[in-house]
Length: 139
Image 1 (cartoon, rainbow, N blue to C red):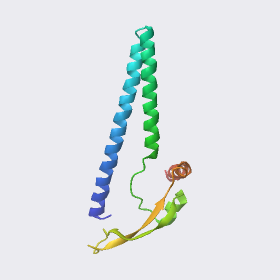
Image 2: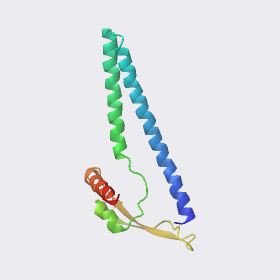
Image 3: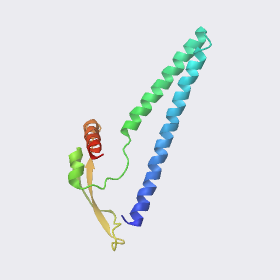
Image 4: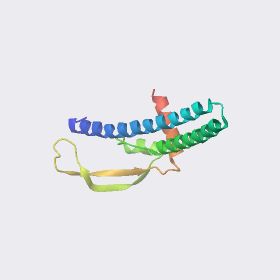
């Protein structure tokens, strides 16, 4: 892998890492909110129990929303051959001609074609299962 490509992938990975760190921080805040609700219930008062229920309900809703959003996060570049991407379940959408800069040696300033694939939200669960099975098989 070329140095430029390695640097580009490292920069992309930093962005993805920051997104997941922020998601983890938001989950921690929601869990702290639930913990506060349980502490308030320990006061053994009716008001404490009501506050607990409200806080725990709010925290659970936040965690559900975060989990749903995390499920939809798909990042990265797929440097697979076309057949590998299609085996996972992605659909070929077409080719963007002269779309992005080439990083290949001796191709400075040239533009390259890029094959575009998609996976729709309703297709993702089946594709994810296929990916997970392939990853387990390769271990």
